[in-house]
Amino acid sequence: MKTKFLKSILFMALAAGTLTSCVNDDDYNIPALECTEPSITATKTVEQLYSQATSVATLYQAADENADDYIEAVVVSSDKGGNFYKTIYLNNIVTDGNGELRAGNIGFSIQVNQTDLFTDYGVGRKVYIKLDGLYTQIRSNTLQIGALFGNNVGQIPAELYANHIFRACTVIEESKLVNVITDLSQINDSYIGRLIRFEGVQFTDGSLNQTYYNAANVDAGGQTLTYITNSEEETYTLPFRTGSFADYAGTQVATGNGSITGILTKFNTTYQFVSRYATDINLDGERIGELPVEVGDPFFTEDFQSAENNTNFNFDGWYNIAESGVWLWREKVFQENGYAEFSPFGSGSTLNEVWMITPAINLDDYSNVTFTFETAQHHLDVDADGNKLEIFIISNFNGTDIASATKVNVTDQATLPTSATAWYEFVNSGVIDLSGFSGQVHIGFKVTGSGTDTTLDGAFQIDNLTVSGVN
Image (cartoon, rainbow, N blue to C red; front, side, top):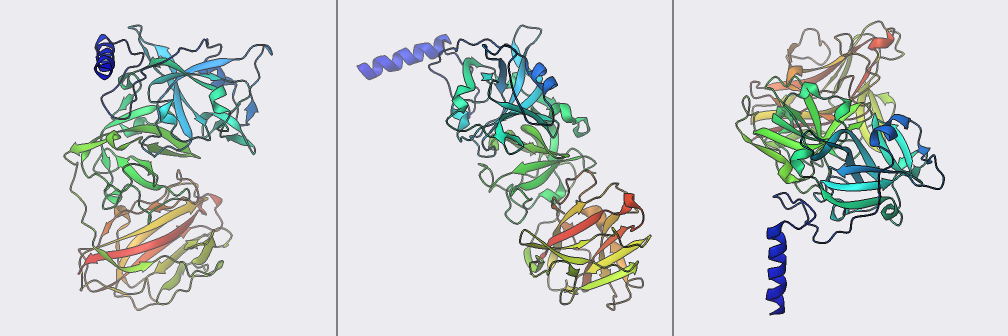
């Protein structure tokens, strides 16, 4: 009888709407059956805090040393799906024309040395943040709040964060948190740290035929970057970041068109979009354009791990040819990772046109042949013909005379870093189709740059070349 009685009481409470939180229809929102509203009043606005923060981590000090300052905000991120780690993204709170609370237009983050933060600070939860004793900083044009770590804002220790972040009983439904965007060209810094749903988008051709987290395709932070676009021409692309602990990490990248929800972040000068959980990705519609060719099994690979740092590139069977200028491609090693690089800086040559060319690759034993590679750049100031990387399929090559060889430019099939990409951040090329070629071919990487014009002396780095096909 006692069990039935308690169930009846709970049912009536739910039916009467007496719970203090609003609950969405997915599994990532936890109903708060009990909640005690904290006796806190916000004394500062997020706008005020943002306007006084600088690029230097600064300890917050209230004007009245006998009274603490608080801001109020709403949580828009979640670590339940595994793709956010020890960071909470929040927005300021505003009241709309109907008198209802919703997320404002200022996003910021708090770093906390604690996991499973969603249990207390779920999506839509209103919170109060005690500022005294915390540091503020603007980094990558984003307001960050936390403890001091070195010279920057870092994580609030686990034993202290509950003294600074207080959950209220109010939960704002997700429809009043999300910003709907249909044009990727609209993205700017004002959207950093805010919850966004992109509609009419899909993953680029080069992002397909892999899982969202791909151990063979990670950046310096150990994350996999795929790319979102909203057109067949892929005029605008947005990096989509997935870590190994995301609940959809091992899922194949969706091929369809639809909507993707997540938080816009920024690393240095590069935007990165981060979804919270698998249900944020809804790409069930018909894809714009045709699907790229399916990738087969690798039969030619080069990860450059045998590179000898700061020597001219000299791998067995490969070719290193200066068509203009005298400097050549170099072998490089950084943090135990080998790669090939060409930098025209300091060469003294007005024009450098330098080729790194693979050994001959026989395509006749395979069908659906494709290849992928990774590229990074540094000191690339402009995206111009005077300083660029190009990719060619080469035949009728005698090993020395590159000018007379037959060359087909396939650069337009590849995703390459631009001047807006963070330095040294490797970008996956995506799948480049070789099904139209046969016989013995070479893959050529050509860099053009100047050793006298400092606006055209950017460097390019190549790593992890893989040629695949169906045997």
